Image (cartoon, rainbow, N blue to C red; front, top):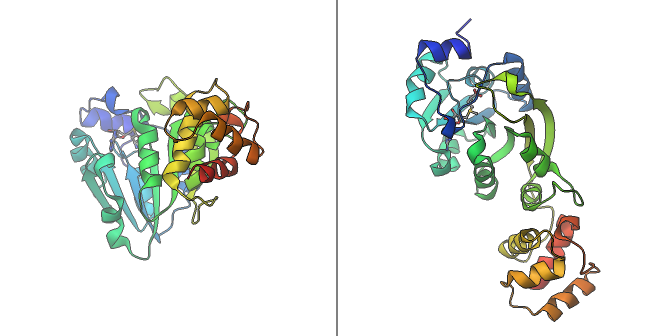
Length: 279
Ligand code: SAM
């Protein structure tokens, strides 16, 4: 048996950096459940974001064909390397995930399924997820630990307070599923928030036909930008559509959407029809 997370922190004299979202998992059962959720096999190339000192990395490497772990904090790299030296299928990259081209990582994994597993740093959760969804890459499945509220927003359906631009964006690119909650006592140090594991299966085809993807996201942004305004006012006030209030009203009538509705009641299909009318 190797050393556990707390023993490793002590052995290497590691000082945890709060600003990098360093809350390390100490509960092996949670680690096993996360890796189970990703259904990892030897056919998989797994990219782990933020391995920390490797609470989850060994379990990933023992089940996957290859693991590439991207960690921004150079002070963690020596401990990570020494602690996991038995795994010849593990590559550790000291880099900011936001600067990594995922295609460069997966280029040597031809014929392997590409998956992502991460206990994400919470200060940068949404930018990381959106980067991986928006850019062109071969990722099929992602399993993330995120703040509970973020998970609720990702899976939210129209009509509720959690439904917003993040829900639409995530559900345009993937099928998100909440898997299980993880309480603060499973980490060191304990975060001040509850956490949830989410599984995102990337869509092979977009769920809606769009004339212009940028326009779609512009309409979504405008609709949720002023949540307390009616859709008609929010779209008019946004000012970026080159359309008068009357023209926008006519589009809404044509699509059978109540002009007094709020953005949070519109489905992805309705946002798609709306944005196609703005092109
Ligand atoms: N995977 C480990 C675990 O479960 O114990 C650590 C998870 S901790 C919540 C998040 C990790 O992400 C930290 O190790 C942190 O240094 C790293 N990190 C933060 N920002 C990063 C970035 N932009 N790119 C890569 N890693 C980052």
